[in-house]
Length: 198
Image (tube, rainbow, N blue to C red; front, top):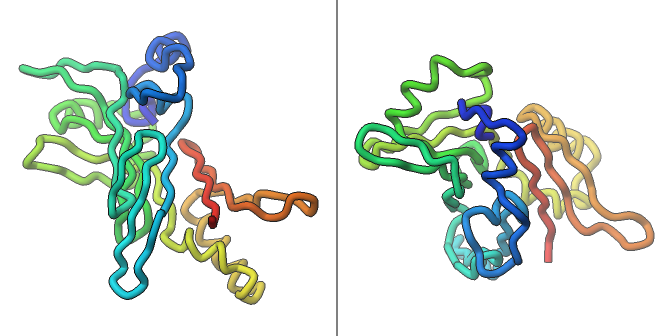
């Protein structure tokens, strides 16, 4: 993701950025390179739509799947301050957006030099913070319908799979006859999402 938005990282740069594999706790910014993020919906009220999400890696809670995680680097100097990019997950009208949040001034300088401008699916300017969220993946909100697929006819299942494919996600049902079904995996060029009903 960092390379797609204009950071030039060699394999050695990445190793330095990610560092050695840390113990699972306590959580630090470099953990995201080794463990990813884990969230569990603890409760959901059908009447109000209120949900409680437990971000198990850090022990935090929220009521939406919106989350930001500052990366351990690279640190970029711009004008009077240094900053680090931030990974984000954000619900939106088109699904769950994944990407990197950067300083707007840096983005204005970097954008014309991108190798693949089409990698950026959406730009959301946060003018009050001087930041911009760059979306590199949108996972359709129908993600949760996967757990009810057996109740849908094959035509509906095929349409749902086609929608994920049109958003550049490969889908894979996890499990087998011996251990049973235990969720779905979604992969695109930049990330992997595993979803499971509890």
